[in-house]
Image (cartoon, rainbow, N blue to C red; front, side, top):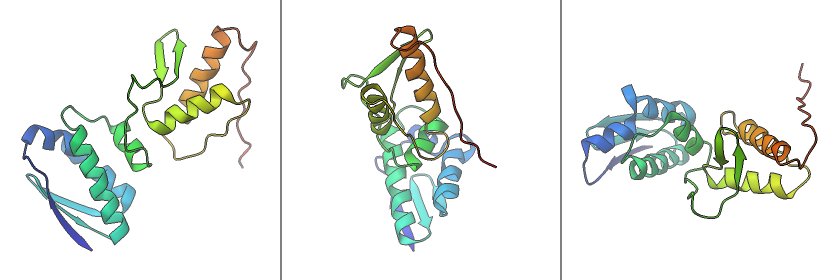
Length: 161
């Protein structure tokens, strides 16, 4: 399937932020979704299977809304893993205090993960690499240790041969 889309209003700065330096964001989308994305100015052409093309278009549209400022590569990876929206920092989301400052979920799923760790004895976090599972779990553990809610942290890893 081939889909053509034009972003409006055309804005070169936003298009630069959308595509990333040397089109790295576009290449990430292509690699993650197995599609081919070609663009010229504000016109995009996406080739691939119908569900992947639609997902690529939705991701590009969400990124275009965010592109008023540069988009970090980590945010693109989070969006491709399914967390397309950022959590609003003022929405009452749980925040962990560490020596380096406040740690809170950047996406709704991360905020829900932090909430589950705070309210349950055991929480399993599964998902693609680079989505913040280990970072948030360690931040939550350090926060509990500094508040004296726990006496020690035990870090385990699965034995994979």
